[in-house]
Image 1 (cartoon, rainbow, N blue to C red):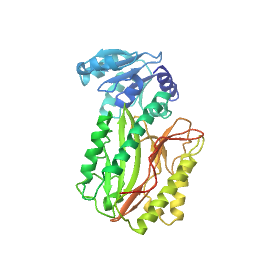
Image 2: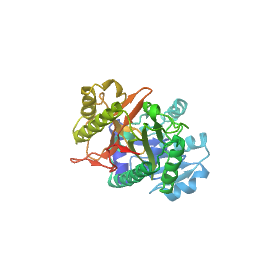
Image 3: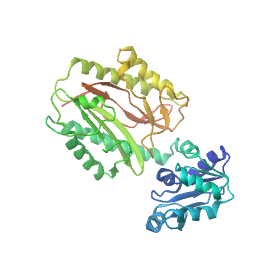
Image 4: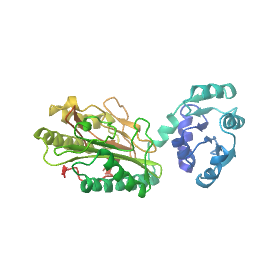
Length: 354
């Protein structure tokens, strides 16, 4: 935790700030070890304070590391307690609420809203974070094994999700709370698979279906993300061809991952292969993204990204092909950037036919 706080302050100094204030639970957890409803404060001397409503104080005391805990009433009480401590500091906050930031500026003239110090600190994972991500990835591999044994004709997408989430929660793995979906997982059979972010439905699996199983779950705060595509019975020759193209594309993307490689070159490695096979119009999203305390964080693995990969970044590589009203295919791994990248998922990428 001490090193994390040093990194946070180092990145704060880069934007001419000496104090960090977080309202976001992910950044609060990274700074303090506590995930909850509170404001986190990191001062230039390394002193760390949690300002929390009374209902969160007990947990904050138990879970935080080397923090002062201040009790305050929700809302204006939390803000008032914060202002009393940092009026003269050069403050950076991750708060994105316009009215809250405007209110703070009246009392703290030298305050700016920016997520940069937080994301730029979190982008490189430490040993403990990598250990947690590896464990999370192992559990997801076990869930793919369950898919290979439990998927059957006539089963609803929602029924498979229930089986998988029951197992996940038994392993202390939980929904990410990702705001853009109503479901914890993506389970998309047949034509539903052509929607990269399909909602889980009551559609029943049929013979000849491809089934996209995108398992994105949180373990001890950290998110691992992987996708496999399964088949039920005999699939079309077009689907077989597309599957092998995605598989080879992903292999080339993984091979491109190395420290100091530009993120857009990883995207290009995947995209060019799919383009060359005349399926480029069906690869409709970026090749990957960073993972950590959020589902999507820095770096972005896309053709727009000028970021260079660094050792111990955690990213995904996930090319796909999506043909409307027919099928979708995605193969995704989470990995740690090293000279020899650590691909954290071991479940086969050969097509598993059920």
